[in-house]
Amino acid sequence: MPMINLKLNLMGLQGPSNKCDRCGLSHFVDLHDMCPHCSDLDFADLQLLLEQQTENTQSVKTLGQYMLVGVIVVLMLMVIFI
Ligand SMILES: [Zn+2]
Image (cartoon, rainbow, N blue to C red; front, side, top):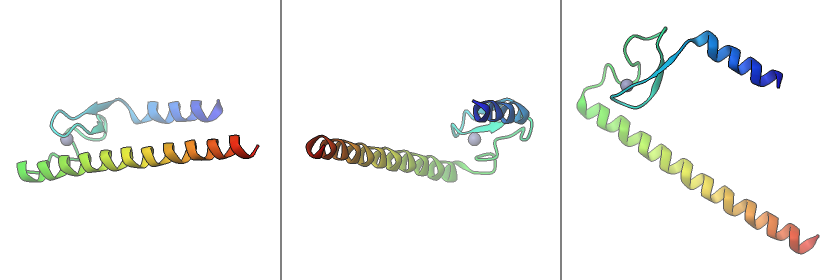
């Protein structure tokens, strides 16, 4: 529980975060008035950024699926051998 409280305190110190309407990424309001992710990007660069985000999300999903299959296989092996 102390680690959770520490994390909450750190989040409180950073101030409120704001989700950018343009790129969908979050940034802290106190530190940046404009979005640090996309404020200096033109339309083509923004499309590239959004594409990369989609690819990253897809790769994380794929990794999660592999890990789920791995856990199921390990559980089946434990049930068989124990
Ligand atoms: Zn943005």
